[in-house]
Image (cartoon, rainbow, N blue to C red; front, side, top):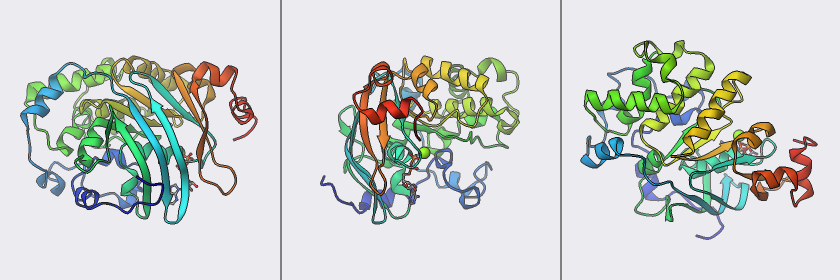
Length: 323
Ligand SMILES: Nc1ncnc2c1ncn2[C@@H]1O[C@H](COP(=O)(O)OP(=O)(O)O)[C@@H](O)[C@H]1O
Ligand SMILES: [Mg+2]
């Protein structure tokens, strides 16, 4: 693919009419969200694509798949005519935590959204480049948007459970939205295992039928992590997942991430340099000089990036001298 704006393919246009995970849309202002997503009688559920495929069920119950590598190649991005990312190359190693750091506005969230095909949902947005999940381009002609979303989950800055929906139903909301049906037993097992992995099970196991909105902020964020995990993603993207949380909740999420990395490849955007150091194996420093698109200045092992970076701009940033 050349480094020029690419108009949306027919594939993308067709696919964008399919149900998508509302929880992956938290950047959308509340008032523009579809109504009724919490209601069991939502018309969105009635328009589900073909339900239950044997493969899906096997996949849900199977032991964790092999760890997946995500590789971004020559990613550029535009909003209208404005280029906001310029030929970004980054390999996010399997089973590792990669932190994206850099000042506000340098394109970290845009890059993250490109990694699971959310960028293309933004009107006027376009992109160039490739995103390879275990060597296969998620933008390839035969790849489906819904598959990319299921393989590559997203957790946002502001915890966004469906507030009126029960904790139990919140966890399996992604199943419904991607058209997977499962028996009660399977759902029970999935809810329990997802909540355990998200580090929330012990706190909520006696109140699974209570609304997700009744949990504390930190618990809600772990509920959102559980919801992402329930569709068995291979990669989990997290956009400043702790910036709305207190230090204690932050530490709990960080511990959860370190556990999760054993089975899911994690990419996290963070403005907290201590957090990047505590949790990440690798780091990429994004920067957009005045009036130019964002790019990666330096990337590599987190320890090296913080202790002996090659570029003086990295040194200044990780030492809090700007941004
Ligand atoms: N929906 C949008 N429409 C137009 N411009 C946008 C949109 N979202 C982000 N931008 C612009 O793209 C650039 C990168 O933004 P973003 O990816 O959010 O940066 P970061 O996450 O590093 O703060 C910024 O200049 C921002 O203003
Ligand atoms: Mg951002």
